[in-house]
Amino acid sequence: MPDNTGIYASFSLEPVEQTFLTEKEGRPIFADKEFVRIFISGDKHTEVYREVTDNDRLRFADAYKRFKEGAAAREQLTGTPLSQWPYLKPSQIKELEAVNIYTVEQLAALSDTAKQKIGMGANELTAAARAYLATAENSNAASAFAAENERLKDEVSRLQAQMKEMAARFEALESESGSKSRGR
Image 1 (tube, one colour):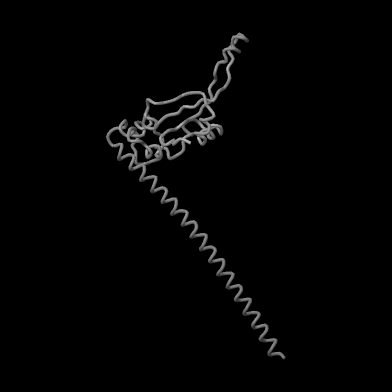
Image 2 (tube, rainbow, N blue to C red):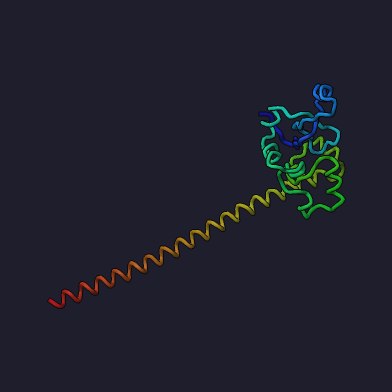
């Protein structure tokens, strides 16, 4: 499987005229065909648009699955949209979208060639994107640890309550057996 770093795809359904049937019927006949648009982040001049192949379905399986589930082209990309990242100004977002960069993850994965096309400040932007993603990942781990900690605290509280109940039962049994032995 080839490395898809920096390469993204969006799928669409397009009407394609069926020439043979159009001539035969004497009216335009169309069939819906799946098409793929493959592009490279940071390169607005390199784009492939063609009918979908089995290889495309496998290579971009996640995007294809979202397409089949009804997602629009922009929604087929996964990641944090640039508009949701407070680091960027609106003008920077527009500039990045002009070169097919729509998510923070795409920005973080830019190649050196793509950075050159963006120009001044590209290294800082990609470094900031990587830092943002690393912080988010660490924050996610911290949230998971906090949730596990809460679960363990609840478990300890439950076990402590169970121990108190068992101690009370044990005392009741001891006092009961002590009063029976005195009564003899």
